[in-house]
Structure formats: C-alpha cells, structure tokens
Image 1 (cartoon, rainbow, N blue to C red):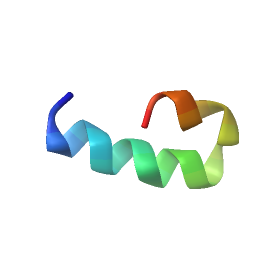
Image 2 (tube, rainbow, N blue to C red):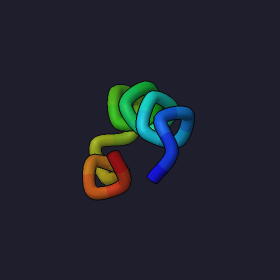
Image 3 (tube, rainbow, N blue to C red):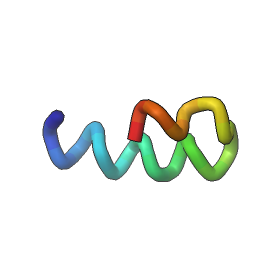
Image 4 (cartoon, rainbow, N blue to C red):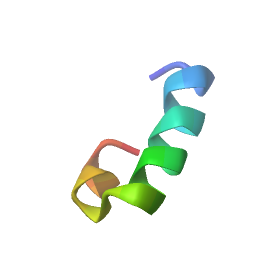
Length: 23
C-alpha cells in the first residue's frame, strides 16, 4: 500500500472502526 493510502486509512479508522483492517 502507498503511504498516502496508509495515512488515509488511519484517519478513516478513527471515524469507522470497521476500516481498521484497511489501515
């Protein structure tokens, strides 16, 4: 995964715990 996606994943994970697997 690109760093951009990783950073975005962290922000999303804060809003949606279900996206934790995405980070």
